[in-house]
Image (cartoon, rainbow, N blue to C red):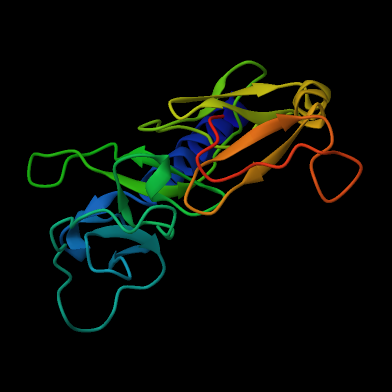
Length: 191
């Protein structure tokens, strides 16, 4: 009985500690003992972080600002979708509102998407990686899906991505010019 109580107590303490980190805060008093309220590098907001509280100075969370440039968001930068965040990060909504409003910030991938799960696309917020050595295959600008790596490679091997200055990148089946082929894209060609 004593062992079960001790395990339950330790489990609750570990859960409370992990839930405390990254909690949005305005002052040190918003954070549990052993945590302090630290502003993000861009001063967009503040969150509880483990460590000793500074001896002086109050911490007030600044208001979230506009998204960082596409794909340039660092950890804890505000975001509206995965496209705002850098590699290895995804856009996640906070658990608690700041001044009554929820917002999102770039976070490390907590877990990768499962086979055939969504892993990207315009406006998508969620894991940007695929588990079990699967590959994130972009279907179109709105959707990317986790597929077996062999499927992604087979479909990509059937064509060569080419880009013509002033036009979009597109796929040409077979060998392209400059090698064994005679298929040479020109400006204005339709994909």
